[in-house]
Structure formats: C-alpha cells, structure tokens
Length: 320
Image 1 (cartoon, helix red, strand yellow):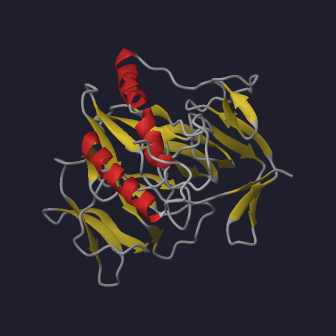
Image 2 (cartoon, rainbow, N blue to C red):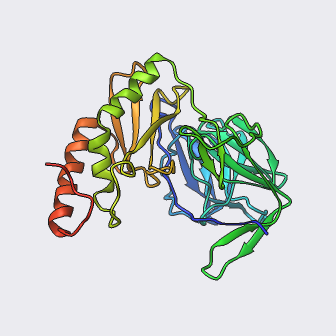
C-alpha cells in the first residue's frame, strides 16, 4: 500500500497589488465577513464565518480576496478551505485544505479543489492545471506527484497520510512524465528519476550566474546551523527561476534547493526576487517584503557568526 506522510508548512503570499482600488473587509452585526471598496460599495456580501483575526476595516492585500472560512450555514466540503474572489467580487476558486488553512503557494502555484478533484492556480487565480486527480503534492523542482483512487488516513501523530491509489508524476504543464535513467541532471521524485525540468534564456541564465557566483557563501550561511557534518558537495545549494514576470508580479522569483533538490526556503528564507531587467536582486523577508541582496547577506553573516559563538561545536563552519 502506497503511503505518504504530509508535513505541513505555511508560506506567506507576497502582495504586489499597490495602486489598485482600495478594498476593506467589513463585519456585519452577526460577525459575518464581506468586502467593501473605499466608497462603501459592497464588493462581496458579508456571508463568511472567518477563522483568522480579521478586523473590521482591515485592508485586502494581494491580487485576490481571501475568506478564511466557510459560508454561513454551509456544510464543510472535502479537502476545501476558504474562498477566493477576484477584486471585482467574482468567485474564482476554493483552495485545497492544508495545515488548518488554505494551501500555500509553491513554485508560483497553489492547489485548488473542484468537484473533489485537485488542480493548480497561479497568484492571479488563473487555472494553470485543471483539477483531474484525487490528490496532488505541491510542486518541488518542477514536478508534482499525483494519485487517483487514493484516500486519507489518520496517523498516530495527528497528521494525515495519503494511502492506496495509482501514482504518477506531472510537469508544470500538467503532463504525465515517464521516469528516465539516473544521471547527474535527473531529478528524483518518489524514488524515480525525471528529466531536468527548467529552460532559460540568456537573461535568465545571467540571473542564475549571479547566484552561482555567491553559492559558496550562501551555502555556508544556510548550513551553518545544521548539526550533521556535511561534505562540500552536500553543502552546495541549487537555484532555479520558478516564476517569471506577469501581471501584478514584475519579478523573477528564484528558489533555493538543497543538495537533494528539495526546496530549502519553506519559511521564505533563501527565496529571492530579480527585477525584470535582471539587474536588481532582492531577498524575500517574511516581515519586510523584499530586501536588497547585499543588505540581506550582511544580516545573515552577523546572525551566522553569532550562532557559531553560541554553538562552537557546530560542524559546518563559516570560512574566514
């Protein structure tokens, strides 16, 4: 029986909707939540029982409107959590339920549910992959595992696991991909190997060369607090462009991956943005949005040096 234990981690969504119409959440007398514009026109009626701490008058952030809960009186639907509307008040989709809330964005897309099947949408709510499978994992390094005929099983540690079913691997186009022989560039997914999934033009390669130039320093900073001794090959990070400029997102997003090609920055550490011309590089910060790369590195070096002082037995040292 096939089984995958799901490890949950919430990742914030960056907002780049400055300059758009100001929208605000509002609460009705019975504490149901809706959205109005700045003139008081109702964009989405108050009909949602919200589980997050939204204040009356709180601004709507991001490219879409998110209601963190169900419609009043509605029966909970399998694998669904919350509602997404566009900023004009049109319903778009229901996110996949993940870690007591809506699914996070991974490699520029998040999972959504329709008719109990799972697909993917981008940050603007555009459907990238149609909902056709009973379960799909988040994308990692250009691939996502999926299954049909599988179901959930409760585990002893309160997480849920997927069991049974027929499994496969899809690429970013939603196409089923066949395994290949193991090679230097092949990507491992669920114990099998698949072709390197990314393609870049010259400007994009220049952006990635910037990160390769700084790879040794970034690798030391990332692994300094790992208490398992790693070889130099194991400490080498990988960088890929997982999102390109589009409406409401004028950047390239660069993700960091560890030596086994798993995403390294699940809490938005070691995620980066490059301007459309590729000349300005930023680190993504949970609290402060984007920070110039050089400033971010300076802060990371100070934190890493302090960590070494407090933990002189750490096996993965910073170079002098």
